[in-house]
Image (cartoon, rainbow, N blue to C red; front, side):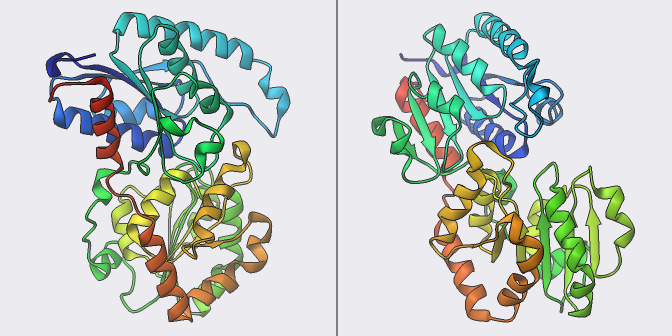
Length: 369
């Protein structure tokens, strides 16, 4: 297939969380940078954050009536078969009407029906697999996908080796070449320049167990004269907002993550693939607390990939309340530990992910530049 640059049409599907949305946007932006006349349509899940984030970034989006399997409350899955059938039907209609030259899936509920619909019509599909352990949907769709772009080694267990290209995960453009001064960033959060600073982030939707563990050590943070930037997520913000003071900065969502990363001396985080890719680029000491509630426990596997290289401290959620304070002090009171973590996590960064993915799609489809 040789395609004139003015008539490129692509569907990108990914969402549910920022970890799926930001890579999708990065890929779309790179395609538009190279081919300004390209038409790009996003497909997401109705009611999820992509339905706001994508249009805010200037792209059209269609929504499917789809959700994931609820692993905690199985009775809530009664409507799942109907949602799946409805989504496949609508995805087929979208693909038929838009007539894309290719489709890229970055994960999330909507990716499955869209890639399946494209594959049924013989349209080239590409998968951007962010995790070290893929979900069932990507394993099934990979059989007919042209290429699978990965961020971790060892995925030959799940995908055909000839299709895999290790590119890393695309990240937000504003994190490339991060050059925000540490003290200037602290001033933005109204924090002291001479105190050790913790950044706690539980993902775009928040993480109640992580918030609970931070709450458990908040007085110790004050006593030790540390300070913290604490992103609670919107669901927990009202519960904790009254604790804000000159050392404790609490917010539902951090809109300027580059500033927060620059201000931090230590980061406590969930282990979503997108977040980990950002953290490797930032190069600060990290304590990863994987969510045990995600499909195939993939966050634990993501965190293990770093921990085995001494690039992060892995702290299971069940041990978090008991050991979090100890781990924080281990990093802050031992410069060698902190330095090793910083150096080793930086070694794992793959900042060219977006470029490598678009390069390969262009090469694979013989799109003229």
